[in-house]
Image 1 (tube, rainbow, N blue to C red):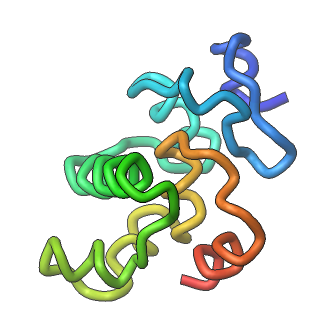
Image 2 (spheres, rainbow, N blue to C red):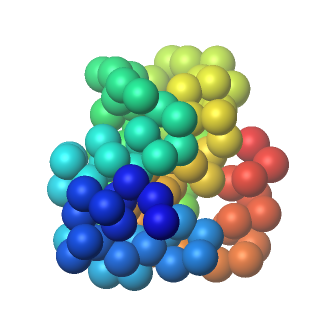
Length: 110
């Protein structure tokens, strides 16, 4: 059992750590999910990425290219990876649903 299940029993995660009910996401959930992924503190840069991922998903229903996120914030290509260990963790902490196999492969490789 992970921390999210202990502290937030109404939040259910699938076997890969994605929220099964993304509508239950909030900033407290993000903090717990981050902690479970060994990201003890979500900095202002983490929140920029989280907000960008959520906004893009809300508008288009798909994962954005991480290159575009880095470019939009004038950061190096590995910015998201350095903060979240991999881009898929950024997606998980953002509370977005399972993005599908193709997107997971892309997000895991970044």
